[in-house]
Amino acid sequence: MKNKKKYNIIKIKKKKKYCFFKKNNIKYIDYKNPDFLKGFLNEFGKILPRRITFLSSKYQKKLKIAVKRCRFLGLLPFVTFNINNN
Image (cartoon, rainbow, N blue to C red; front, side):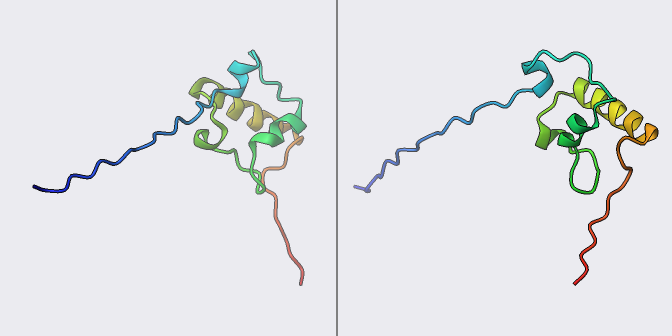
């Protein structure tokens, strides 16, 4: 007879990530608050993608509009440079 090995596979459930705005019941993203919007930007000033921020598509679009308005008013920079002088 063949030796049949049984493997116990433990499945780890990952905690589902929810949209920040839905979880905190925020319906309007204020473009006049650049400190809040900086949390959704990377170190170069680009908007982070949904797979990193876990935002729904509705709020990702609203965030995009708010960041663009904030940049147009000059509250957020369009591009930031990391210059290392050695």
